Length: 432
Image (cartoon, rainbow, N blue to C red; front, side, top):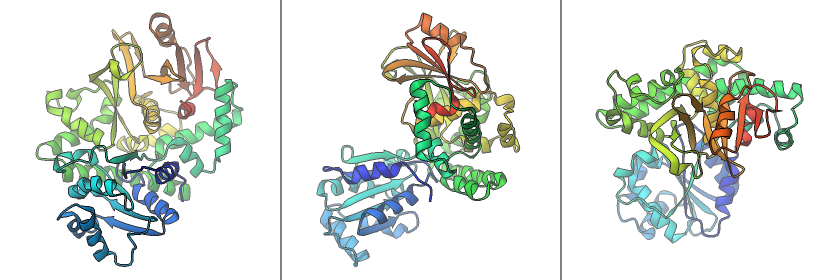
């Protein structure tokens, strides 16, 4: 069993005094059903599981009135051996995007507070228009991602205490012992190639067979394409698929701002903007918006129409590249993708830490990969795929702009470059 941090979030939700129905969303195959099943079996004595994809007939529960009495009557008929009056009961509505009326019913289930309710599903943001009345204000939200780097390390035998020890080096800025540093770099390269999809990680832990891993990743990518065909409407199907398939090409360029003409020769935002939003709503990709000004709050200074697009799981991005590229990454050869893979993994890490993504560029002379709020100050992050720790752009931002701290992420050990600029090993992005 892979250890997942989200279990702690689920326990916190269960212990809330005034909790509402929980809506757990995330991309396909990040482990939502598996983790909810474990959580419910360990924390409830009465557990009702409904999967609308496996058994579409369950939709009939929500076809009539949506008051709590009617819903309970339907549940009692289908699950006669479950005591709905017990406070230790949980109802799980899996793949709830398949039943829009069940989404509406979450409001009434939250108001009644008769038993706990957990709804899970993918592509939830895409079906809003099919929901008669979305239960705004009546849902507790939780987003699940594929395994982060720390969880990946746990799966590969690194314990929690070792990670706590790494964090102390960030606090003191003392270099990490070289043997540990090299081991972490090796694991980080594996994480880039394998990613965090639970079944893929488990296969790697069991077999260490990269070809099996790649085959599984390609299967997930095929599932994503099938989801596009299933859920997208009309002409959007081909446009979304073309945007999706263009991502490696977008990231192979030195200037990584998303360009519609790489999707189609005459492509433009009018034609493809909604297609990109679809991928983002499906938790397949993340936007990294350009900043007009370097000041807090970052959200207020972002340019909505200028952005980069990164994959949510870097292992899946790797599976979209040419065969054999995975081994090149393990050997440190990045080819035409240069630092793009490393940028994507940092974007992946920040997204899993619930950070919105921003970057900054000025007159094509300065481009900083990420701008974040770190320790309550404006911080510039530069990502390098090698040990090069020269920081001309970071120095310029600190001297000429409102940036108080610079962090360079590279394969080099911890070092202090100046009083405001430090270098950290790239795997320590998890602590930012």
